[in-house]
Structure formats: structure tokens, C-alpha cells
Amino acid sequence: MIFNVVYALGELAVMYPISGGFYTYSTRFIDPSWGFAMGWNYVFQWAIIVPLELTVAGLTIDYWQVDVSVAVWITVFLIAIIIVNIFGALGYAEEEFLSSCLKLGAIIVFMIIALVLVCGGGPSDGMYNEYWGARLWYDPGAFRNGFKGFCSVFVTAAFSFSGTELVGLAAAESKTPTKSLPGAIKQVFWRITLFYIVGLFFVGLLVRSDNERLLGSGLIDTKASPFVILAYDAGLKGYDHFMNVIILISVLSIGVSGVYGSSRTLTALAEQGYAPKFFAYVDRSGRPLWSVLITILFGVLGYVNVSSSGEEVFAWLQALSGLAALFTWGSICLAHIRFRRAWAYNGRSLDEIPFKAVGGIYGSYLGLFLIFIVLVAQFFVAVAPPGGGPDGGTYNDAKGFFKSYLALPVVLFFWICGYLWKRQGWLRTSQIDIDSGRREVDWDSINAERARVAAMPAWKRLLNIII
Image (cartoon, rainbow, N blue to C red; front, side):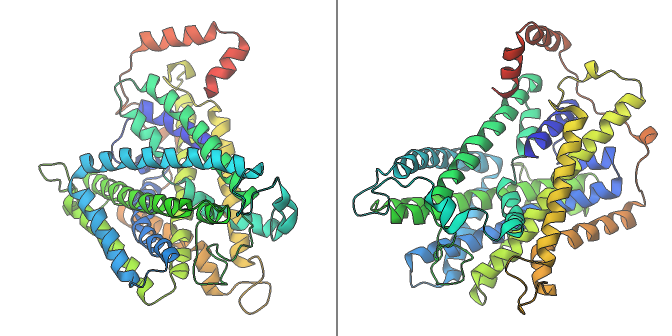
């Protein structure tokens, strides 16, 4: 799904570079009202991440059982996020670079250690001092709660992948997008393969899914990341604390990204008349102050943890953010399909497209279909959750349903507001503008690169797609 989304976005971004956000493609190729909804949805998606990460910070600090109010830690992290954003784009870039290097090193070290533990090379006083293998596949077993259990993790997965689509716009802003974009998108493929799939594969081998210390177990007070639990059970002294610190750094990094992404999208909405004009204000240092301020105010929602369960708040915010990402990705795929249709309608050749998605229009259809299936599956478990409803029956109550599916009515609300504001609906193919705002590209270098690839053997051309 993500692979096709990123390639579809890459094709659009090379031809129509934008600084505002993905919603402009929905406005241009699908429906101005839907574009309005997707713009505000994206603002909301990132703004919600700020209190969500503050909630995670409180849950993570709980691992050390520090006798300090969670409000203090929320305040500390919120101030840190504000300080980084005071420095604008420079502060964001420096923080991202440093935290990314640290996270990258930590996950690589983790995978090496995890491989050793699976093979039984752990300390003698730990759990993994003999061959461990795939025993957890059988006890407590893979795919807990069957098909419903499988479907129930889609929102968590979507939340984890949020932001992957940013690579398309970042690379499109470069001076040579036809060279930089393919490489950037291929990195997404390998990042998904190595860090998500391989990393979680080791977690699945080494940490029981019914471990009482996991978030959502509801059995004991102290909740922890599976990475931290694994380090503790392995008997690696201090490594569990190190991984917990890495998680706290990640929390800060994602919170900063939430403020940055939400505020910039909100400013772009204001510049195009989709939000109140005062949000378009940018100071001499390039900081959209009003947009940053309103996004930071969302962080105040994190203080709900003081009088409520952090786990409960986390579930509500994660459902909002995770499902919102799915609507963003689906809109990118649909915008690409509509663009290709308008391109053919105007008699244009595919050879005139500087960078083409590997799967073409069929890849976008597949991506859109998978997103639809995920939304249907999530609706299914929102109505009839694994383990049954709160009253012991098969079905969920209203609270449980909206905790899992609140993003849908939020998106529909934005769509209705967009229609009432713009009074424009679905665009016909003949109405789609494919010419204005197109990027001028160096066709000599593009044709030379195409000729070089065409001269390769078939196996090398296939390898060129993914490496």
C-alpha cells in the first residue's frame, strides 16, 4: 500500500511541485471540497500527534515509577517542543538529523542483539540463554484472536507509517527531482523492509503477545515498549533503560514533526483561501507564528492524562491520527488515477511524464483498494471487537465504536464544511487542469537516463527498480 502511495505521489510531485501539502492534488484532480477536507484532515492528523506523543511520554516515564505527577513530564516535553520550534526550520532540521542518527543506530544495534538472543546467545541470567527460535509462534501463538485480531492492529500500523509520504514532497523540492526522487522512494522500500518488518519480526519472536507489561494488557500499572521488555528479560543490564531513553527521544522528535507539519499545512491552507487569513502570517525568520501557536495549543490536550488513564487517552488519539493517515493516502492514489485519466483525455503520451510510478495507474488502483479494505476491516472490528463488547456481547457500544472509528465522521465533517464554503463538487475529466504550474524539466538528461536503463539486461532493469 505505502509503496504504491509513495510512487503515485512521486509522479505528481515531480510534475507539480507544491509547498503546501497533499491536499492540493485532491483539490486539483478530484474535488475542491474534498481537497478542503484533506487539507484540514492533514492539519488535524499532525496536530493530534502532539498530545498523543505527550501521552506516550507519560506512559514511558512510568517505566521508572518516578513519584512525580505526569503533568510535570507533559510540561517538560511540551516546553522542549516549543523551544525547538522557536528556531523554525533550522531547529526542526537539526533536531531531526540528530534524533534520526540516534534512532537509526539504536535500531541497528537492537536487530543484531535480537538475532543473537533468538539463537540463544543471551546472558546466563536471562531468558534467552538457550536456543529460543520460533517457540512463541506456537505458544501463545501467532495471530491472536484470529481474523479480528489481525484487523484490529491496522490503526496502530497506519499510525506507525504516518509521515512516510513526506519523502515525495521533500525530494520533489530538490533541484534535480528526476534523479533524487527515485532514490528517495527506493529508500522507503528498504526502510519498510529492514526497520519495520525485520525489527518487528524479532519482537514477535522474543516478546510474548500476552505479556502483562505491554500497553493494552490492562493487568498491571507499569506499561512498557516491547523493545524495553525484551532488553529487561534478556538480562542485559541497563539496556532496557537505554531503549526507554531512545523512545523518549523519538517521542520528542515526533512531537516536533507534528507541530512543524501541521503548522506549515495550515499556513498553506490560509494562503489559498481555505483557512482564515491570519494563519498565513509568516515572520521575518520564516516561522508561521499563528499556525505554530494553534498547533502547540493542541498539546494542552495531553493534560487530560492527569485526571484520566493515559492508555485511554492514547487509544482515542491514536484512532484519530491513524485513520486520518489512511484517508490521506487514499486521496493521493485517487488523485494519481484522475491525473492519468485527464492526461490521456487531453491526448498526452506517457513518455511526456518525467517520472512514472512503477505500478502505473494499476498500482494506484491496488493502493486505493487496499486502503478501502483496511477501512472496512477496521469498521468491522469497531462494530464487533476482538473479545466482544463491554457488556459481554458480540457488538461494541457507541463509545468503543467511536474510539476506533472517530476519524471517519471528522473527515465527513470537513468535507461538508468544504462544500458549504467552496460550493464545488466532483470535477469532470474535462475540467481538470493539467498544464498550469507544471515544472520545467531537463528532458535531455531524462532521455539519456531512460536510454541507459533501456540498454540494461532485464534482470538489471528489475534490480534498478528496487535498489
